[in-house]
Image (cartoon, rainbow over all chains, first blue to last red; front, side, top):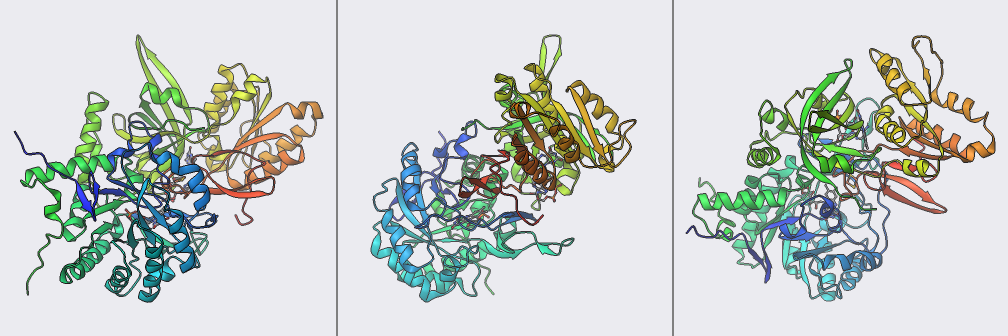
Length: 316
Length: 317
Ligand SMILES: Cc1cc2nc3c(=O)[nH]c(=O)nc-3n(C[C@H](O)[C@H](O)[C@H](O)COP(=O)(O)OP(=O)(O)OC[C@H]3O[C@@H](n4cnc5c(N)ncnc54)[C@H](O)[C@@H]3O)c2cc1C
Ligand SMILES: Cc1cc2nc3c(=O)[nH]c(=O)nc-3n(C[C@H](O)[C@H](O)[C@H](O)COP(=O)(O)O)c2cc1C
Ligand code: FES
């Protein structure tokens, strides 16, 4: 009898049936994909919900998205109903699904992050809080915190004081040294880090000579950012390994195929998130689980955790 | 209202070039998808290099095809169009050959750039992945149930969802009056067949164009001929009218203003750039109002068809 291949991963005591996670902002509040015939939320290892702020946010005017070579820009601007309405309307529906949920929180001030985190304390369906200190699409908050180690530290420690849930610090690639930010977040009490959020970018219409997005700039996602993300995951992984820390990495940016997902894990990610790729193929989670299993079996690997961080650098 | 969406493989039956810029794509869909489709709804069509990968392969049935795609999707060219293209269901009908029934969707598409260009190259027998049916349809059922008068106002490509709508209306015993405006490029090679089609689907077709269309020639805008029509009607008649409209945004803006001026019920189909197409990303919003309450709604879920009273048009564009 062939060995059973296990895709299950453990993130600081939290067990995911597979390492595939839906990325924040690309999966709404877990209600939309579910409308597609035969789609099952349960096929996903964990679901990250859209960023939630204390008060409702209207978001940016359209156009909010534009396609670019092997990717897209978005400038949604964190449109969300605010934490109160989220709790009232959306939380009850999460209980229907037998999978793990991550909340994602955002704020314009350090205090707001702490307050939103506190609001999540009575939401049992949510096991971990991803702290978005990396959104490039709003004037205040978001990335302003994530590009400065001191500010990152303050946000995460504020959240730490207000929650017992696992904390995932979501990092931006728009910095010179991502390791410094990761270090600050870990020092402040983050249990995990996730990276990367979108890359600052712009597209211009040559006829009107105006940026295509109303917001002028946006965040690039999709296959075009994958090599950047792989590199940054590996940088953070090396830091974690050198310092013998127990900090799992959730890798993301441009995953479309099972090879992409494996590449992230070999670079050092314990799990991966998928966003833009799920617009191309909504069944990406199921497809990748199957293909990763086949790949591992063909290599006689029966536990996916064996490949995490297994990259060997060329020696010079 | 929450509707079921299918992620489904279709088979191209025909792809007809209307002229250099326009083509009509005819695909076979599964019965269950066909039966869900309503006029005004759209499909999110995958158009990547994968189309090339799948070319000229024959599959016995949907499951074999689905399996092939699952196996080969990982072999895609790395540089590709990651977003699907939203395209209205232009028509949906059945073809019978003896006892065999084929369920068909037609798409009327204008070549813009890469995505639509790729779609224009599809050939008989090719396979195409679509997500459908998506969005909120025209509220034509109410017009039928309440025996209302239907006016259709379409501009250029805005004719795309109208043929399906007219067919449904006629099926239900309502003959609409059509106001159709187009520019020269749209009319070439197409106006005579289109007009014949539209005539068969309506009480009367009013055409506005900057070109001479056989004998009918109104040099002006479709909105002008709409006003000419409305201003002759009594209040009672106006109250019994539903306008359904689709076309370029500047036209829709004027149609919305006319509907407001004459206080006529009016629904219109909007376009916005889309990523997911089914509500997950908040990418495709338009600004709407409900009394004093302004908010963004998703064109892919709450739209693309909105009541014209709801829409706040951007001052730009
Ligand atoms: C609900 C809806 C229904 C539509 N129905 C039809 C139809 O029946 N027939 C038809 O010819 N066209 C229709 N369109 C417009 C069509 O989607 C665009 O022309 C097409 O996506 C252009 O793709 P491209 O790759 O050729 O152009 P590109 O400019 O290269 O496209 C780049 C990106 O911008 C998006 N985009 C460009 N123009 C538009 C637009 N006008 N609306 C929305 N997204 C756009 C594309 O989807 C793509 O993501 C519809 C649009 C919407 C929103
Ligand atoms: C439309 C869209 C909306 C997003 N919204 C959020 C958000 O609200 N919060 C957040 O932390 N990240 C957000 N992201 C970033 C993604 O979670 C992810 O980090 C990024 O897209 C890279 O992954 P991908 O290439 O697989 O999409 C968004 C991305 C997209 C494309
Ligand atoms: S396109 Fe994603 S919400 Fe409409």
